[in-house]
Length: 296
Image (cartoon, rainbow, N blue to C red):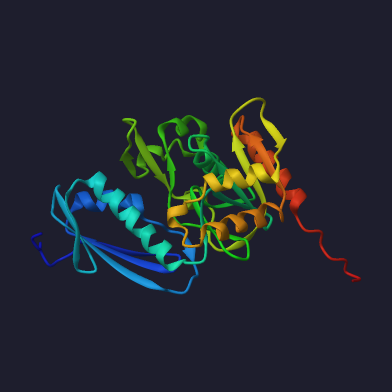
């Protein structure tokens, strides 16, 4: 790789949990592409690692340096974003060595944290974006989370990824949709990166105990169904990023079992998003701890 100009007209840094990432480039094309990765979430985690990325080249093909060492060369803007996205989360997984990495949504209401999981394509991100605009809800992540030994879930900081089919379901985003950072996807459309801070609330990432686990599906009539602990563990196992979970196989499965045996577990078939928000609100209300008596 050939070193480019020494000046960096575009640069920014961001902290994702215990890692700080610094990006620099002399390309306007790269500056636009990296908006897809920018995270505005407020976080308060001790710093464990700092990583510097520099992108060389005014136009594609681009070369990437990590902490001064060449790591990729000759790639386009789409490949660049995908590579840097992956590298960020590689570093996060390397620094969070005692957590289970899960595919799921962290949604809070009245201090209760709901863990929403589902197979790909059910609509987790669309529901997460809708909840971000719903009064009372705080949604910290739409895709990935870490479950620690205290059964606290922490969302991995990233913008919510919305495919074109989400647009008609999210009227609150209609005026801003075309201005959201976008990246071409494998289906020929554009995936938009939504910062939940646009919903007018503080986007904060913090660990919090899970209050209930909900398996989202799209089959049959909308509404709640019972689900066995075994079925929920099996669902969570399928949604575990085993290759990114440093714990022994039996250890992380045991943690999932501990979770589903300590909190309510339900299956919810999604119909309309407003109804889903109302039903999730009722679940959180039922899970709310009873306040202690003033006389106690």
